[in-house]
Image 1 (cartoon, rainbow, N blue to C red):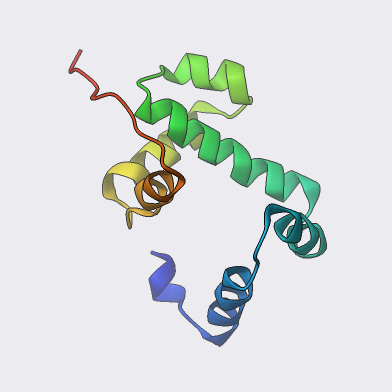
Image 2 (cartoon, rainbow, N blue to C red):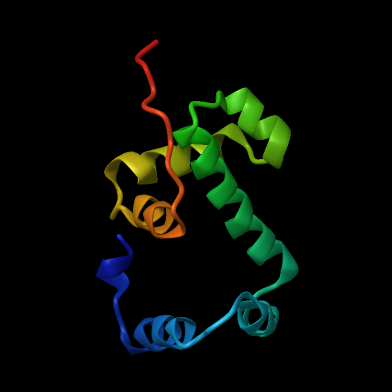
Length: 103
């Protein structure tokens, strides 16, 4: 979806992010670029994605993150039908998840 919005400004933003070399540099950059709520929102979505991969229920994710079930559903949909960004990040972080059994 975001690729459809591809433009020079978005490319520039992503290239700037790729230049960051440490977590501290990320804190500095995102403090300047985003509001605290925006960064916390992105972090909560990452947490929701991780919890979904671990097999957590929406109610558990809501309790832990404060996210609405609609937002959790959006994260889940992105993980199933999106560009694979969550899985790529998890893999590069070295995070592994047990296979979920169908309920």
